[in-house]
Amino acid sequence: METQHDILVQNKRSVQFRFTINRKFTVIRGDSATGKTTLFQMVSDANMSRGTGVAVSCDAPVIALYETGYQYELSNEKGRIYIIDEDFAKLKTKEFASLVLRSDNCFIFITRESLPAIPYSYKEIYKIKTSGKFHTLERIYPDFDELIEKDVMVTEDEDAGLTYYQYYFGDKVVTSHGNSNLSKFGSCESLLIGDGSAIGAYIQDLAITKSELYLPESFEWKLLNNGMFANDETIRELIEHPERMVDTSQVSTERYCANLLADRTANTPAQYSKSKLNECYIKPCCCKGTKCEFFTRDKKQK
Image (cartoon, rainbow, N blue to C red; front, side, top):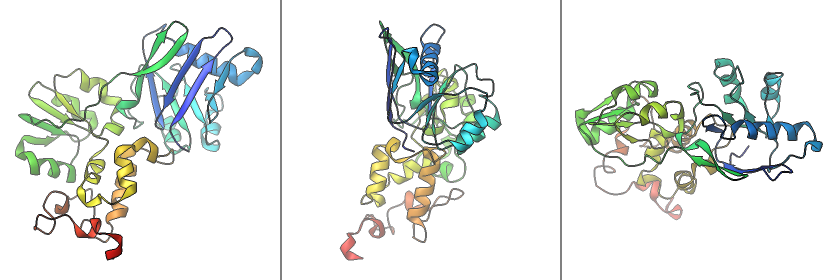
């Protein structure tokens, strides 16, 4: 299932919610009385009967998910967009996370809590913006896409990821051993580096530190930016629009990028390994300072 969908929810009183989801997981946060429960209830009413006066317009079914029968729903249905309210008691359980990760559906979570078992992007965390009866979604966090050298630089990555950043910035780069520990290294002297596509559960903690943040889609996404892939149209499209390339069969953009990188470099000099960084990604091709001929050569030269 594709992950980009335009959704319009409206009732007879002209109360309207219009927004777009971009990825498998979308999170809506906000204080009480901001419209979150109203959105969920309107979708629920539309599911129950046409006589409620609520209409939902979308290219996929939008379904309010309740605890009754949710295991069957998530295990057997596909091609749907499920919206889940914050009183869903199973929302933070490992069992529920396991179901949604395997599910071929999109999910909108209405919750003020973090969901550490689900890899969602910090770019897909929203609040409801209201103008009279019209409601839209507004991103809570800006892009953190600038790599700034600081006295202390901390990456969630270990092994290949740590080696990559240490090559450019030396021993000032250390690892936090995972994204859940990254905020512990926050200070005004530090830069914190994480995989943006899966760090949504920890962005609130990161944002309240005094650190600079650098949150590319993932480490593998950054490697795919390498010039050796300049002629690969699939990779170029992924770099520009990851939300268009990663469907609901993928756990996250991070996993998709890792699989794509491994596939494209299998049995080549630049073969990717998560445990050890291949020097092709940090040193000039064949030590000649030229572009990698294996990946960038014209197809006619094969």
